[in-house]
Image 1 (cartoon, rainbow over the protein chains, first blue to last red):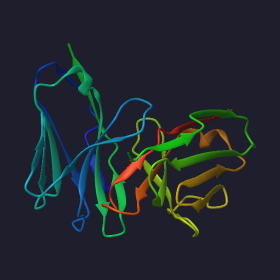
Image 2: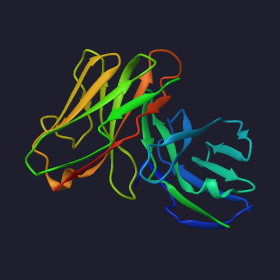
Image 3: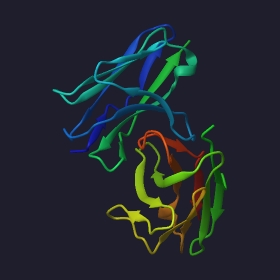
Length: 110
Length: 117
């Protein structure tokens, strides 16, 4: 089983819609969680950290469920520019290593 | 702030040759630099972690004699792919962690696309 699992998609969503996807992780000792976005042939860019209490940044909301070991990302009022691959990232114990999911591809259509 | 550059952006080389990729932190000092490899439609795979002035720590399955990493200063790390083969063709990305702030916060270079013919 992979340490971090994501549905690869692609998720085809009309512009303006709300979309959400999850990521599960296997290491219960993981301390920090992040969502990155990666555009085609580009480096990943940090979208947001995920806190235990959940956090919101504009149209993006991230939530953490430690009991079930998953994090989620919700995008409201999706824009064409939101089309990208969204990578779930989890830390491995305390050695600051980041474990990456394979990403969920999101395609926003006009 | 927190800009990481990577050179070259892309390189095409013949099988058997060696390729050096540079990763620089432009406006901060990087205690630790990470080298990743990403194959199409796959996740980033950590290859090695390097701290300035010490030997890199390689992930299981990564040949240290094939992927030579040098981290001679707080702003520069290099990855040399020795005797490259077509299966080494991939997207290589470095990231750097600053000496202060969250150790989990990594700043990524733009990546180097290596094609070995």
